[in-house]
Length: 490
Image (cartoon, rainbow, N blue to C red; front, top):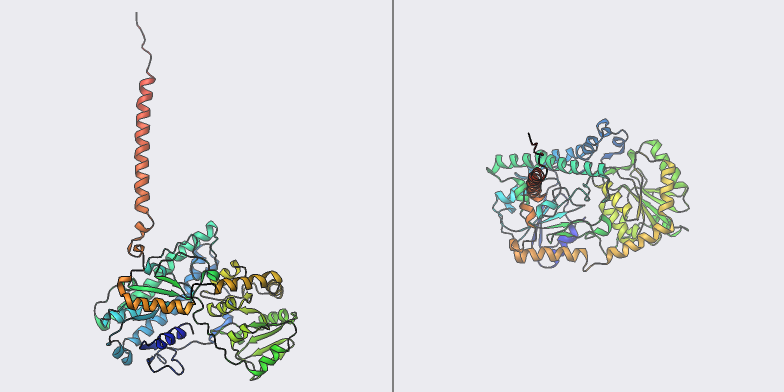
């Protein structure tokens, strides 16, 4: 959803593309040749069981270290998937054939795994690389172009922190940042490299290959995600996927919208979470709180009938055209799980949010939206009828509605559209290749140099020596001034 508009625009501008993906396009233009990854690994849509979030791992309750474990342990399934996908990609014949071609540019996703960087190296591809990040920056995104991901004010992607942190939070964020990078290297990169070397022989450290990125395009924008250190090769293109044309809204939903007197709230937990796995008591909490609203509610709920199920002011629907609904003038707020795409849509259209985050970057996105003043966050663990009612009252209040509209205007106030920005940097990379050098030299510095530890030690040593000399001289002076009196013996 994020990448397809970008790829189509490149095709419209006359570029020939070979696109290898788990999600083939519908009606691709003739100058896009597709290679399908479907079948080599499961596509997990509506597969996450909410019951898994009912009981928190006891390890998470351990002070400091529990918070670090909470950031890392839920990511382990991604490591398992990365290895299996890599094993199957290296033997995928259509991809192998495609990698024998000549390319002016290589576009890769920067997420969980860098097997494709090893594949490009093994097949001798020398073209410059543009990386796309579908959500917020990953912990290993910034360092690849020499942007400093300082944990004192840049929260890790799986945390619920903001840029304003206490000492304890900065400690947790620092340890989590170190831990998740080490986990990524050991559980994904080293394993992928072994898989590649069995097939192709010696492959460089994938962390070093990752530094060959010319540009990183990140699906974020500081108006929502907060400001962070940038270099020329780290470009925010948040909202690139938002299309101008609208899909038709089903007639029964359109009627439900138009007949609402006080507006409508859209409620969706996205494409990964299986909403019908909600425990009964939690579903009752949601229904009781939503039933108090004078507004109507459209709730994405997989078990609904073809024309939806109506419960008082709540219409449960199996599927909804989310962005088209959020754009609708009757929709006044959005209840979501904190996924970047849905939140981007809400920010773009100036709709305030209640966010109930579950996993991955959702806690970070929720915290950022709350810090921007356009969302109220309710944790799933603490979800009660009262907490949700309070959050809805705040979100539907005049203050937050006005703030959401203001943030939306700032979101759109850019030098160029996010899609045009992405296209510019892709074509600029084709024109100048590796010579563009949009990264900072921080990319190649070891940690002790980047953190100025050697400089700090040198300064401390110099100060200690200077103080020692001063003390030595003072003692000498004092010894001359304060002499023992001579005793005259008759």
